[in-house]
Image (tube, rainbow, N blue to C red; front, side, top):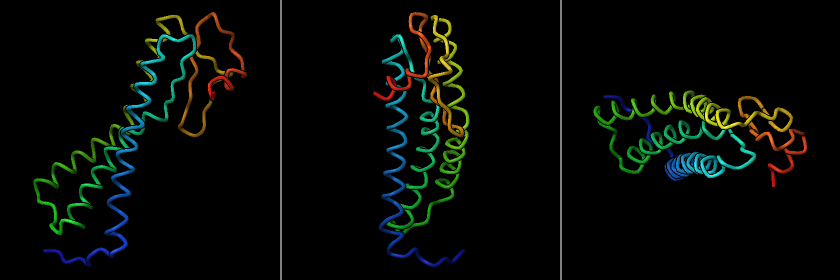
Length: 153
């Protein structure tokens, strides 16, 4: 059996709620952006925020860590082998979703929008590192950099 130093009081108080709030916030943001895309899919201008789709994997990972810290820090019991097995698979699934979901969502959204006559407006689209906002417009709208201002409104 492994002996470890118990976590400090500060770790016990701050870490589990922080992970829990972060995980729930990430999953809720993902759900909000999926609903927002679904709601606006028939508008003349659709913004696909690829960065938000990373949040599903982030949320699952943070919620897994939150469960482990809550059980071990506040419950006082170490996780069992069966729980460890399940939580490890859940954490690996969250990591996989972190990389798969944004690209799969972009692929299917792009396929649907292009099939329905939309085109990408590169002037209004924006990318910073791996986070990309892709603006799709119908032929009735002129592609211009000024569309960025309409997006932020």
